[in-house]
Image (cartoon, rainbow, N blue to C red; front, side, top):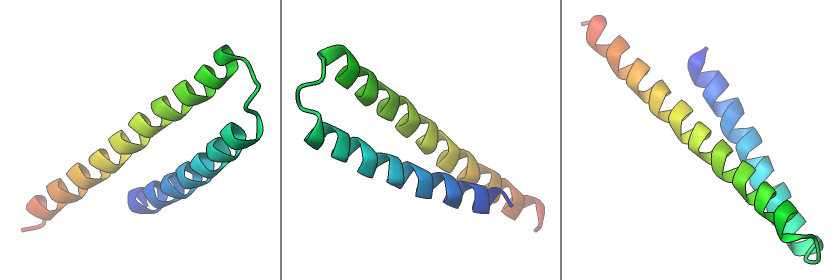
Length: 68
């Protein structure tokens, strides 16, 4: 179940990247504060997604060792 949740998280993260690219292409005149906030949110979510993937990997590795 953890693996499925990670896949769903990755799918939403990919959609988020598409939306952020569209935003930066369409709203070039927005204030630096707003554009920086969007970039900051993407950065935080990217770090979170990497942490979720790392956690899933570590949990799956630990389950491998306990099943032996």
